[in-house]
Amino acid sequence: MSELGFHCNRMERFREVILGNELKRGEFYHLPPEELPWLKREIGAHNIAMSIHCPLVKPEWYPEPPTWAFLCDVGRENRELNLRMIRLTMEMARDFGAEYVVVHFPSPPFIEARGKSYAELKEIALDSAYRLALLGEEYETPIHVEGFGPSPFLTAEFIAEVVTLFPVLRYCFDTGHMNLSAQRDGFDLYRFAEQVAPHVGSVHLWNNRGMDDYISFHHIPVHPSQNSAQGWVDIARILEAIAKGRPSLPMVLESPPRYPWALGNHDYREGVRWIKKLLETLS
Image (cartoon, rainbow, N blue to C red; front, side, top):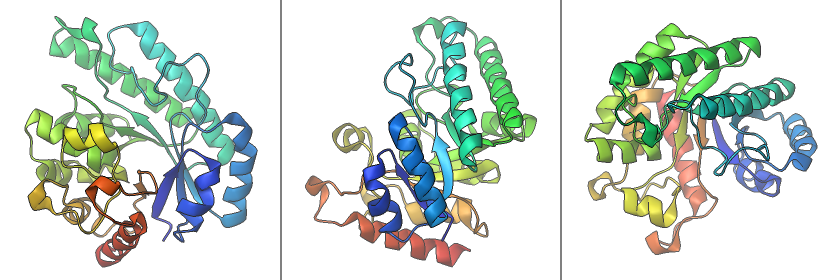
C-alpha cells in the first residue's frame, strides 16, 4: 500500500514505523545531517516512496521549532528567511527524488499584522504562494501547503484560489490541526473537508478531541476506539470525503509510535491496520 506511510524524524525508527508496519511510504523531516546517507540507502534498499515535511535538515540559523513558518508575516525579513530554508529543502528533495514537499502555510501572522487590512495581508499571502510555486517549478517537485494556526486565509475559498492560480501547489489536509482550527474558528470540519477535497494532494493522519488533548499529548495516533461522539475526529468520514476513489492519494500517519497510556491501553499498530482496511474500502 504505497499510499499509506509514516512520518519519521529519526532513522532509528525507520524500521519500526515503516518496515515494521509493512508500509512503502515515508515522510521525513528534521533529520540530523549525518543520517541523510543512511536515509538514502534505506529508501533505495526498500523501494520507499518519499516525501519531505520542510525542513529535512534544520539549518542552524533557523529559529525553533523547525517547522514554524512565516510566509504570511508582515515582515519581509521573516518571509525571506522561511523561503531560504524551503529552497534548501527543495534542493534535497530533488536529490532524493521526493514526490513532494509539505510546507506550513498559511501560518499565524505576527503581532505586526494588527491594523493591516485583509487585502494587505492577502497580497502578502498570495506573493508567498507565488514564490512557493516558482520553487516547485524550478525543482520540478510539487509543494503541498498545510494550513496551520489561526489565520484569515484558512478557508476553503482561499485554498481553492491558491491551487487554481498555482497548479504546482496542492493542499495537505491535516486531520488533527484542522479539528483544532474548526473548534477555534467555529466551522464545520467535515464540510470543509468536502470543499477542499478536489485540491488535496496528501493527508496527515492523527487525532485529538480539542486543545487540551493537543497540549497534553500533542499528536495522538489514530485508533478505531476513538468515538466522534466524544469529540474525536471521525477519521473514516474524513477519508470518505477526501480519498474515496483516489487510491494513489498519499496518506501519512503523523504521530509517535505509541498511544498515550492516559487515554487507554491501545497499540498504535491497531490504528495502522484500521487505516489500511478503511483505505481498501475507498479505493
